[in-house]
Image (tube, helix red, strand yellow):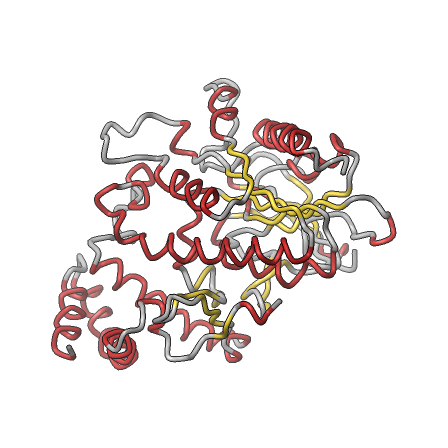
Length: 64
Length: 335
């Protein structure tokens, strides 16, 4: 899981057109990978894509 | 208006412009209250239009609770706010003239469908409307997946593992610009990465005529979006039912629909509109679709939209007429 995420992030960075963009996206990949990994791990435990955020959401119905 | 002395001419670069907006802990962003500017909109560069927000931060006349009339609350995006048009020519003002009712405009630029739902939940007790009209530009439904817009972190909904709708509120730190930028950088990166995984690239060589939301072979990427919209619609319907508020959706016409045909059966400009209509019918929510009337009235010499898809004064007039007719048909203006 961890390896495939990093491979994807690397592929994402390399897909950028110019060298400086590739560098910027590689840097972003390093910075954001732990947060994304946390989200992916949670997803693999059964939660859906939007629950990737590290915080737990509130039920909407108690609002009214 | 408190800031009258600060009136100056601005050139609004449309969606990216935030001159009229500020951080809001509930909605992510909301209109600045008591602001007045002369604006040269991107759609009408040679003309200057006076734009002002009332004390509640809405582009509307001051709210008068004591008028005692039946109230219609209109919530929506920049079409409702009136991008590129004078305030008195917007569909809300024209509808007020036609019906003689009090029509309140809560439109805001770049407002997502999730924020529209929150506006209904949070603001309806203040305005006590009899009717709520939700203006939705079908293409803009994708904003439900955007968690960072124009420099602001948005509240957003998601479905948990039991497919229950949850609300992710605006983080407390997002009130500070520097943290907004940091949180936003992550949100933007995450969104772009997910799109990359789905073979979508909105950053390089974006062509509005081939926006992925119109492409059949990308539609599976948006399945989650429509599931989310389905749940949000359920919340809005239940909320209005509980409070005896009549709810009507007004679907605008997608700008691409009024231009040249797509040239491929796999590129369908009606795709988001049709999926939205399906969900509205499923949730038994009444709606009015502007497409046919707009197509009928649109011509090259007298268009109903600006080049960027926003409705112009003629479009607003048609919008208000169609709404008025629908409200009349439903008998909501009299009962």
